[in-house]
Image 1 (spheres, rainbow, N blue to C red):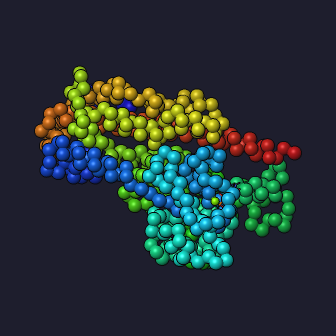
Image 2: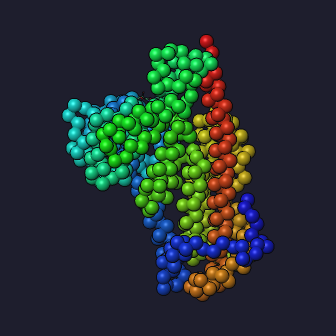
Image 3: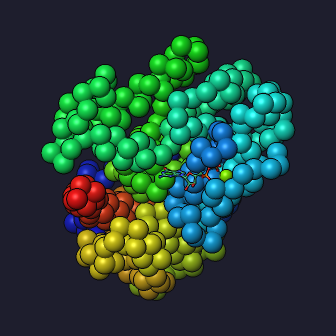
Length: 433
Ligand SMILES: Nc1nc2c(ncn2[C@@H]2O[C@H](COP(=O)(O)OP(=O)(O)O)[C@@H](O)[C@H]2O)c(=O)[nH]1
Ligand SMILES: [Mg+2]
């Protein structure tokens, strides 16, 4: 669990990054420590209250409801899942909050593309202003109404993303044109297809096919993300996650990031970095709000609040029994195989005693750090205990977060290993006569 703080040279201790410092100083203001902590707590609570509304739209049958489930990391058969294969009969969008992050709401919009479809009235009917961005799904090339809708969204000043669904179906159909050695069976099918079967080449053909249609229509963005229901780690789903995160307004980014399935190392890294930006505020809030002195430690802090933070980190990185059981089931792996690579405690193991144990571990190193803090944040220095508590708490949270993120990367590696061998097996099965 992280490098032990005891014996760490004070020069090696990280400086507070400038933007964290700004947030910290803003919270401290001219007030006293209690006020500063209350402000920090308020700032953190505001972040928790941020709501993100994602609109999923496209033709009926294109895979909207399936995608709504996929992005919420649910299987179609799960209780909270959107119903699949239902023809929409109303113009009412349906809200599907993320099962673990209820402030992230995915909206299943009514199907577009009927005879009477008009992009502007459609957007009015579904409540355009509510949404942060739009996902337009198609299981074929994008059609006129997809394009008109994108252009209207653009005109009204919001972002849209084209998602091409059901690529698993395309790949399966394409594979049938090739023999068991992967050689194209019919010459006349060879116009664009490679002679030797190649999944990436076929995906590129699908992508180019979509893009050329969008370019011809002069849509503002002709990026297309290829996905398949339930295959979160595959095709362009991880790239879509990253793009959405990058293009989201910064105050909504954390809310969205936390809700993302841990399907790529890039997402995990971004999640960690974004969560890190809150640690100073969390430490400050913990040092004065409901803080109690801890026996044997020159630290005062709100242990209950720290416990909550650690449990939240576990949830963000899928480190609890429930999430691991689901992941194991989805990937046909024994849960023990996933647990074997986890080094930090799971959510269920986080107790008051554990928090105190961790704080004790980081206290010695943090004492040295307090001198630095006394100089930069005089208000903290005014309360001697806080000058030690603040860095102690900071290092405890920071190390726990780093460890949880590293665990999630290792779990992902185990899952991805499985993915490669599984897909290999699938190919063999498909082609045994
Ligand atoms: N193979 C495959 N089938 C899909 C995929 N996405 C959706 N479907 C199927 O396509 C049909 C329509 O999907 P649905 O999500 O109900 O579309 P909606 O009408 O746009 O909400 C259902 O039978 C789904 O199971 C996918 O990625 N792969
Ligand atoms: Mg539907």
